[in-house]
Length: 219
Ligand SMILES: *[C@@H]1O[C@H](CO)[C@@H](O)[C@H](O)[C@H]1NC(C)=O
Ligand SMILES: *[C@@H]1O[C@H](CO)[C@@H](O)[C@H](O)[C@H]1NC(C)=O
Image (cartoon, rainbow, N blue to C red; front, side, top):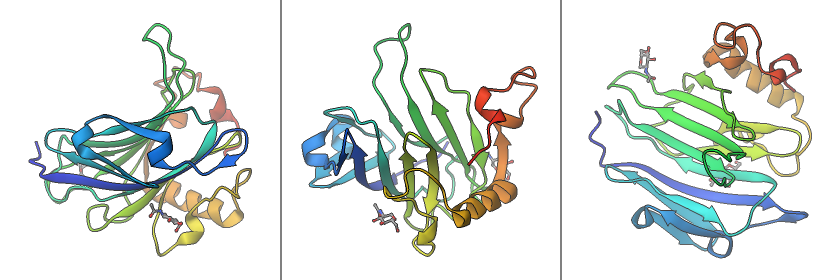
């Protein structure tokens, strides 16, 4: 078990869309709802801290259909075993029995000193997840802040680490419909070299009947 002092500082910027493109700001459109001591909203910037006592969460004062959230995260170095740093966005839901929520997860599963984190993603649609993918990091997520972007539109969901050195790997609101050829190449390179789990290849788990989207072209 890691003894984490301060394991995460996050600086997030948020762009979300209602009917039209709107630039949501944290001070007018978001409130801290949990872990308030670890949650600071300052204009269009939000800082969330995960320490040994608590994480933090914010809630929108209205619901958004599409958009992107960028979060800069620096993970705890050395012994992070049993610490799961989760960065996720979710729509609200009523109860366990009446759960139609959508959710996009970006998680970092800690490890013992010298061993790599696991990057774990999942997507929930109408209350159902089971869409896990896992990667070994292709960079050191503890050495510095990295910019992790969750982008969702009616056409696609992209969850990616955008390092400052390779801005062409980042997705902005102008690219709503289609990933570019160079983005596809970058995604394929990461998937072939660093992916360690893909629910779409887990025929045993789904007893041969893989989820529908596994049969669709990925891009
Ligand atoms: C920790 O590292 C080992 C060795 O690389 C790896 O097999 C294991 O999956 C890692 N555990 C997590 C939770 O990432
Ligand atoms: C994340 O990276 C993008 C592209 O380089 C940049 O525009 C944006 O400001 C960065 N966001 C944060 C929160 O650093």
